[in-house]
Image 1 (tube, helix red, strand yellow):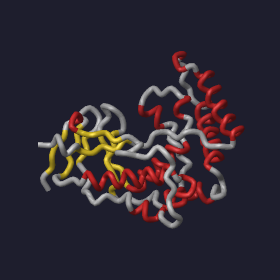
Image 2 (cartoon, rainbow, N blue to C red):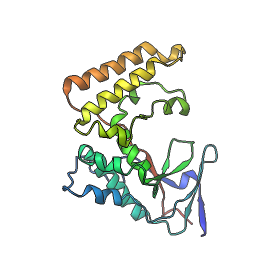
Image 3 (tube, rainbow, N blue to C red):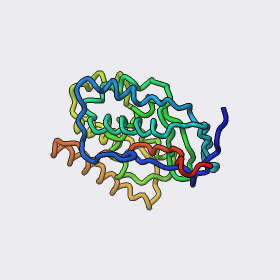
Image 4 (cartoon, rainbow, N blue to C red):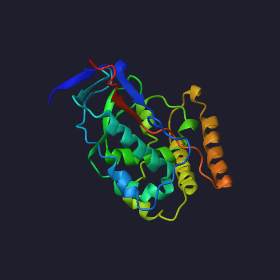
Length: 228
């Protein structure tokens, strides 16, 4: 299979809102969530990714961008109807079929996400609402706050919980991890961060409504208008 090496400058980064996402919540008909999970399966072959300082990606010739648009739309619908889609997202956590290529962070290269990884990221975006309250020193520090309890076993005991209740639990988990940290750098203002985390937890508890979600992974695809 012939491939094209695409520099970072020739790659379109598609953020969590999608190619042309509707900012309003889009209801999904009952019974359609299984279909949306299947819609996350890409017909494309995974690109060859080169990470860290190289920051390049080899997209196969004929990589279908239109198909990735449909995947992004399905991902957004699952996100926007989270409480209803959560059981289906949990069931697909182990699905290893290729879904999309992401740009993790500027200058950090590209990664191929499976359907399961995409479903996990949808869940994380709704539960890791504490990230804006924490100052991160780098990737390792960032990943310390990946909400690791997410699993099928985790879901079995939380089937009746609302999204805001799951967010409260996730924030409390982050508070516990934050308190066990040993970073004494004064620039991090640990007491302020801890206070902000507690305030976030308390505000969700008082409102009994979920707070805004975090961004999902940024989808990367080639811009067919620039490939030569």
